Length: 362
Image (cartoon, rainbow, N blue to C red; front, side, top):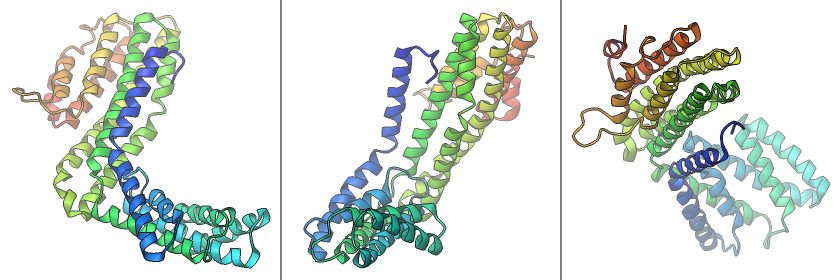
């Protein structure tokens, strides 16, 4: 969080972001807990293991809290966990336990896993699980039981991923809301910079804006993963229209973000050279931030358009250089970028291009 953001505001933003992450992951967390308990019960019943820790570990490692390419990740991690436990058990019987043995087993396991498959998940998990085998006290009845435990956990994780896939729309919505809130925060920081004529606030906002691409990439990956789940799971196919809408919204937000980065950079440059920007620009930034916070919300009862569309339409008719008092080159550039961002966001929500442009003052 940039230093220029007041501490109370920074705390509120952190709490809001944490809440949104939890809302997007609660089902996956519940699956990990239920799967770990089920794997323990099955391992005890099937193999007579008194403490089948590796069964629980395999479930949690394989499922995790992410929906992104979940079936593929479960398969890769399952292979890695099982391979690591098996190789660790076999090698430990030959060379025993100890620090140099751990070094040897990591090298051997990673080399074999790399030879069998190039995926980083498989290689890393194979090495990690082999370390567990040597680092923990030997199991009663030999190491075969640990491998059976791991296989049981992998089977449970795969069954949960196939039969009870998390609704991918939850993760996609959470990422969309998180990114919208993040972008709105940046716009509010830009408004503060304009009102206070503080170039430092604008520079801090620009530095944060330049780091938004990973969040956009994560959102795009989540949408792609959701489309995969809807193709493979009959239980989730009804949600495909929403994922199509999210795809369109993502494209619009991506284009709008690029325009807003230019606007914030121009604000910082103008203030750095002592140029005064019209206060109405701060109001435009704040109105755009408020509209972005409502993206994805349905229309209110009795209304025909969603709140974000209505707010953006109201803002669009105000975005004229003369209306906002933009007489300098910098102010005019900022207004032009705001206009482009608003058009991008309107089109992302289904407003035809000609209608979006018609709203803007000539």
